[in-house]
Image 1 (cartoon, rainbow, N blue to C red):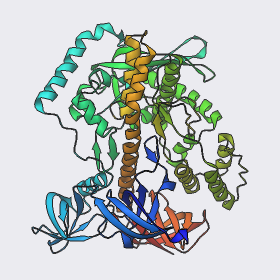
Image 2: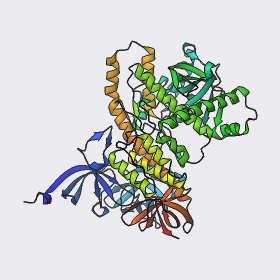
Image 3: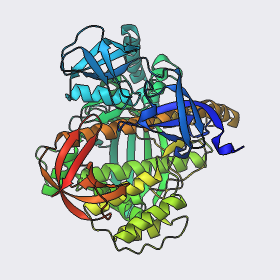
Image 4: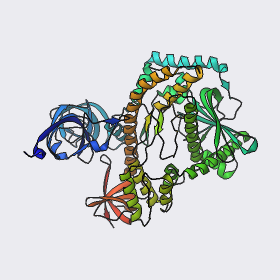
Length: 595
């Protein structure tokens, strides 16, 4: 008997790709840090997915690699999203959820997007979302596609009033903390940002050193572990940002008002204090409870203008001096980071000139995250680390091949040394070519993840790294704060208490890894939709070939953030001029022809 023809059955889950195919992952496929390995998933052609939708549990029958049949076990979703037809009598399912057109129980306004339930070939509308391709429609469509809520966290009136009273009551105990209100403190963020969770202070020290404080909103002081609000945050443990909408992890009454580090307000914080030496080395880290008062809320543009012009109309001289001191501190950190050869330093070059303000914030936040990780490790406090594993050997081969096609002899070792990788990338011309290579490396690296296990961050070339600086937006930061506060309030706490916490929180970190991955997909999709919306059929664009597959080439269109598909195989790195043939905001597919 030929075993290759033997029929096998497996139960698992289907994920749908908007292009019409899907992937099957067995229920017994192992997970690491809450994530499946892509190699455990099987490609499923669209032809055998009739009546099967995203998230469904199915039984798959196959002989060897040939899929014979897929049978539904249970639906993964209660609701679906789709577009009402021109006659108002039918609705077509979102391509990211599956394929199919259903007869509506009740006629609807044509050309709108709706949420609906299905019963065989009929659909019942439960919510009208908005006109097709509107901002509201795109936002809700992609959030739902990736299993994320679009509505804000809701609290009943009693719970909301209780939380706000708690905020006021905490202010009675400000005298029990380190008072840093005499320090000049500023925030730097987008002009419209209201959920501000980080602030900066600095002073010059003898011997050329600079002392820096990174003040982070003390969210854990108000959000009790296992409370209703804590449990809501765990369900979706991240804020999601997009050009079409923002979904905050916390209720806006807290994240943008009561706890946010707004100017002129006394706020509770956890402050990370460290010294940056004249040689760029970071020493003397300490972390403690404190109170601060923010002197000024800057936008990135305001800081850039201040640094470019040398003056700032109406700005307190002490505040202006602080901005310049922070710039010097960030520049020192930049020099030491460049010496490490971490590829994350290339992000700035691939995203255009983001300005010095972004550089100040990014470098000081990374330094705070790294310094706090080392501080916790020195005190044996369990650390929910942020780990980014090194490139696998197969990925190194793919990257080296792409560089060779550009005329660059990389000659990598395995595992690849960050210095060798950076040396090769510095031979790539800045602009579309470098952006394409960075995108390829990011794809091959895969996602970073949270874990209590030891691990390093390859992109930053950091042996100890965590997330501390955004507890209003990321749940792991809130966990880090709770660990620190537990230690600060009882330095004699036993190891068993920490072990119990690790055992309890490890599954939660796994869940966080899964959800933050979906959130990243949603954000990327919404930004891609924004780029595609700017395209006009018939327009001519310049681009670069970023890869080939089968008989098609992927073209990274200059200045758009959009990758289009061009029939035919072209050498990666080839500069090319193309014309837009079609652009679909729902499948995120753009087809082009060569000019």
